[in-house]
Length: 317
Image (cartoon, rainbow, N blue to C red; front, side, top):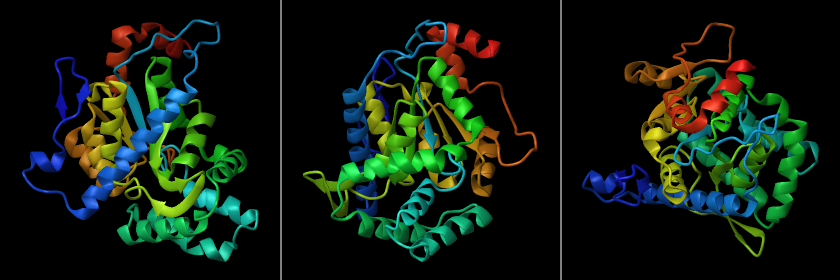
């Protein structure tokens, strides 16, 4: 990543160019997925921009324009996999049978047991999802996402992670979800939680109808890092002042991109990386006390830069 004098993210050489080699086909798809996700998120933000967030007493939150927080969704913000919860909601509406999603539920169970995602599982989930949405309208998916969020996903939000997101909002910072989940569903989750927006997998559509193809690939691994970097350029963010949260070792590229990385409910590999790199670790899955190092560094910087009132409000709660 290259940065200008202001410290804000600037367009520059990609990581493979800095390593002196051409990207593979898979890396190009991941880059395309990241760009598409950032474009969609930025466009939606412009369309939905509203007044600044206010505290209960009506005091306006001072905006911190160059800092933001990025949250993975599955097993970080939401207990389990959001796409599996969505599929169960669709099965309840007779879009397909529960046996049709048994494989996806098995993949999620396997992830919970091993703490690791499998690329073959990700690919299989992608193909299944694309076969479902092909020929359907984007509006239909959005409306279904809203219904299923309210019925199923709302009760599966980790309170601890939601509180962290609120801390960033109270400091006047943008808060984004970053997930492999379809961007329409990811945006619904972000909206329901009062967050800034979402970076998610972008499915190709023509005249409001899904074609059954993706723009690039699933937003996963390196694709998430590309999306965050691309959004930072569009929004004028300084990545050194940003914070990222995830449970998965697959998100190390995204976590390494920002100034402060936090492992939430980490898998064993991410826990090891976090310990080596000195990243904060928080675990909401059990009653054991998680490793904590005050508030995330970037949030502390944001408060010092103009969010003091927000910090006082938070400490009074």
